[in-house]
Amino acid sequence: MPDLEITTLGGGCFWCLEAVFRETKGVISAVSGYMGGPTPNPTYREVCSGASGHVEVVQVTFDPDEITFREILEIFFVIHDPTTLNRQGNDAGTQYRSVIFTHSPAQLETSQAIIAEMTFGNSFESPVVTALEPVTTFWPGEEYHQDYLNRNPFQPYCLFVVVPKLEKFRKTFTSRRK
Image 1 (tube, rainbow, N blue to C red):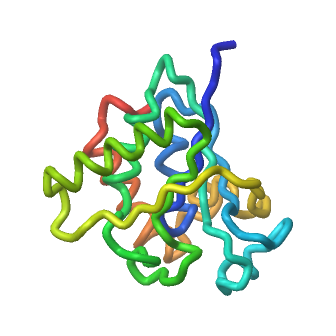
Image 2 (cartoon, rainbow, N blue to C red; image 1 turned 30 degrees about the vertical axis):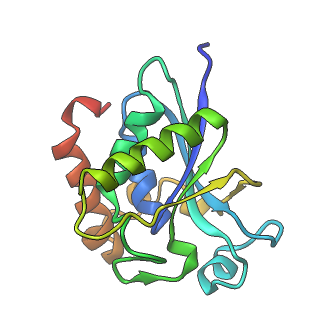
């Protein structure tokens, strides 16, 4: 088995990120969960209330021989809005903030570089507000949150929020799809 890497990303509702990364070539797993707050073993209700201090995240395990950390971030920055502080669409609160939890100095360096490139290249009309934070304890989300889109394809949030982000990924990153 190759040496695998892990990254943990927050970019709004974890269902969107998970759906995209489950379809990404080189990704071994994408697990919805929580990171960044002091409450041990938080529940979805605690995280959604904003009281736990956690972010909805997806922990992505990937094979760096098939996809680089930089390529993961390129996908991440296309499928969510990194310019809105504590908000993605109608999801508002610190639990939906744009954040990269770095697992190594190399991930921090790559994250800083890509954010600088986007900033100086005026990739967005507004400044990138994605936070870079050191990895903390990852708490997997409840089982019913895992593979949410496939389990709930006709749920309105999935139809109107998750599916459009997945379609954007499919259109923009055709060669990166499994």
